[in-house]
Each structure stands twice: as C-alpha cells, then as structure tokens.
Length: 173
Image (cartoon, rainbow, N blue to C red; front, side, top):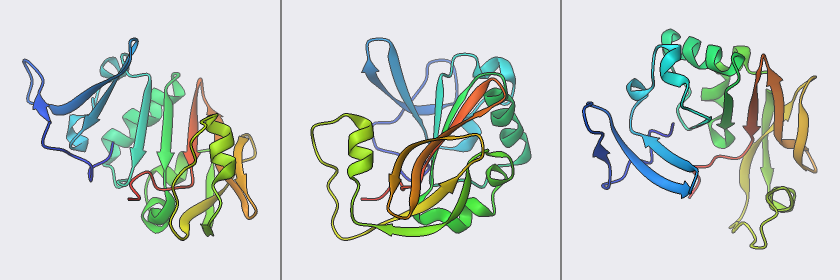
C-alpha cells in the first residue's frame, strides 16, 4: 500500500466502492495499487487471493488492519516493507512491534550495487547523491543485500509466512 502514489488512471472495481489501479505484471500476476487503507480486507477470507503485500510510506494503521495483516502473514502471506527516510514513522508504528526484522537506524548510501546484484538486472539503479536507508537486523532473518554499514535488504520467517524489509524508500523520486 502506498498512499502517495495514486494516479489519474485509477478506476472503481465492478460491484464495489473500491477504487484501485490494476496492472498486469506477468501473465500470472496482477498488481493492484490501493488508494487508501480502507480498501484492504478486514476478514481473513478476503486475504486468500493476495500473494504479496507491499507497504511503502504509510505505517500508521489501525489495530484492526494491523491484526489482519499480521494474521495473514502468520498464515503464509508475504509482507514486503520499504522504509528508508520514514524511519521515525515506522519505529512508532504497530509494524515495528511484531516484524521480525528490526530497523536499527538511518544510514546514507551512495552505492546500491548489492541491490543490483540481488535483482540480477543488467541496468544500474540510478542514484543522484546519497540515498537514505535503514540498517536492518534479525536473529532469524537472511541477509539478501548489504551495504558497508550493514544489511539493507533482509527476509525473515514469521509463522507460516515471511516478511521482507527493504531499507530503501520505494517512493524516493
């Protein structure tokens, strides 16, 4: 969920009041960008068709939705959190209390080559100046990408599911 990235191409789904932008990512995968947190399901049955949830930029969720996401992850869901410059907002959120990867502080990066290597992409990630990121730690997690200052991409099990934390803000222009 990214509240800052709503575009003019958003449209209402047939038969509901939910407005979302849907993009065909691959033949077997649709990406749906929600405009507000209220569009997320409250009941676990509503989460069954969701394979991955990406949260970037808004971590102040109400208790009901936080519990729903946590139960979904425990039951096998995959939550991806992108934090970066929003470190303080994330630290004061409900997510920070149950996510198995802990944010240790803000670091400033110039080199994203470890993320480029992880993605197996041939193109470089364009960076002008420095990128704010968070350093991540987890007793049960696996480091996927690191900087000189420590891990910046990590995944960890949580119940039957998993949480991936990216220390860089996906909303950064």
